[in-house]
Length: 268
Image (cartoon, rainbow, N blue to C red; front, side, top):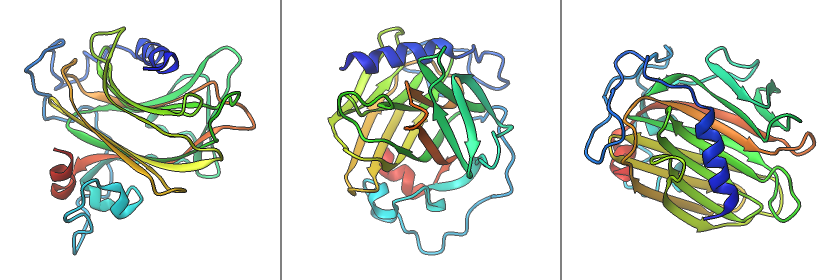
């Protein structure tokens, strides 16, 4: 485990507000046997409904992203949250640093007063799949825009996937037993130039899962894991560590929804 990933986990989780007031969420603290309440709290209404998929492009796919290379509707039975980035979304909250909408994307830049530039969904979700597509600069020593974290976080729990360009590693962590956290999966990975990535994060009960696909190289990684932390609805969470003005991390797309049967079969 890299020092940067641990510091990011501690810093991000510490910024989150208590979600105990979300209606319908579980009041249980950290447990080894609990299950997440099946309700979605403060969900954002969409007009998407259930996608008409026709032939299932995910049939037999394991892992998922190499088959579709995007946040395709086939991943979802129904969509719960799909922010538009023509302006800073009303259904997102700025947590720290400098995050703003530009050219239908969400830009994460360095703020002189904050180590992290962070934004989250305004709603909390349970039993949900997050898919996001983003662009980040190449890694390597001396590159400032070197860390991006994506996941579901509650007041003192949740899961995060860290893309650490400087340390050239991927980490999937559970934010249980703060401030230490639990490593669920890791892989060495380096990219030299700006690359586009697609990431999946799933959290339901004790089941959690993450996937990463580098669209430039077609390399992919899957991290299944067991979650034993706080059972509450989680915010969709996006955080860039020390990004530069000239090397921002840019979120191009984000969706949260109920996973489709084929997606669920691959993740569980």
